[in-house]
Length: 142
Image 1 (cartoon, rainbow, N blue to C red):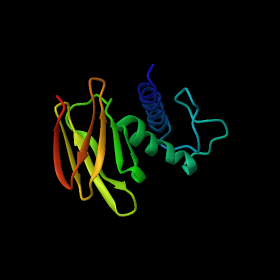
Image 2 (tube, helix red, strand yellow):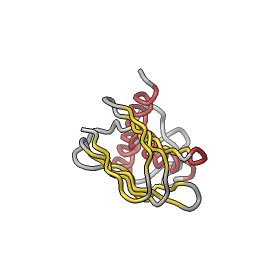
Image 3 (cartoon, rainbow, N blue to C red):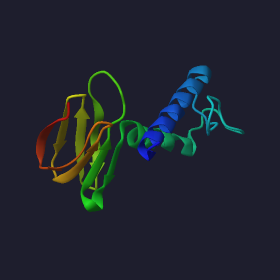
């Protein structure tokens, strides 16, 4: 299995498990079991700690699929999430001074930025690289 597909599968499973544990216990835990929907060993309830970083990073990088390499002025979007309507991220930070909006559906990607960069877009059906200028850019993908 290709590494991005595997990361998506593992991330989705992990986030579903965290959601199930929260639904059962009405709290977030210090840590979670790696392969099941239970709190980890010796985990404290109502304590997020470092465990709070993983759902945010995993959601952005592996489920929504957005990552950046700002020294190279490049943003990668690996679109694997199957959902109705638009999804993406708004106000995604680029370096210390900028942010972008990346939104799209099955047919079109919308990119809004104040700074130029290169977008590397991957879906299961296509792969493309495009220079993005300041403003809003529409990219047909469907």
